[in-house]
Image (cartoon, rainbow, N blue to C red):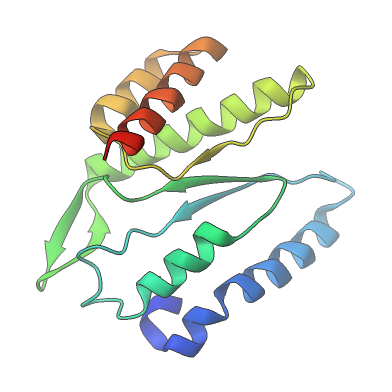
Length: 160
């Protein structure tokens, strides 16, 4: 978020800076986990421009960032509370729902990786109802249940 606040130049360098950070982090932790997975929350921009004037640039950088071991989860559609005319922070329910969805996406990636099946765990589509999606995701521990939740999010985004 801070990169979306400071300047357009800083926001535009987000992808390059993230790549350097991840390469350095993975080099330091290679002995412990050679393919360290990263979960990136793609920033929501709508309604947040007042607090973060360059957030749309950061969001674009995040959407286009490529990494074989990254799971992207979109913050858009989760519940925010207004602060000084802008949507700055997630509510408690929004944070919990986002966390549940992040865990579901990680579990989906992990289950399919264990089975040797490549999966693009990219959930950057807007949920129809994040609270319901989170409840459904937490209630479902099966691979099929997780796939159904991801497919529903994709279908909702395609219809939007």
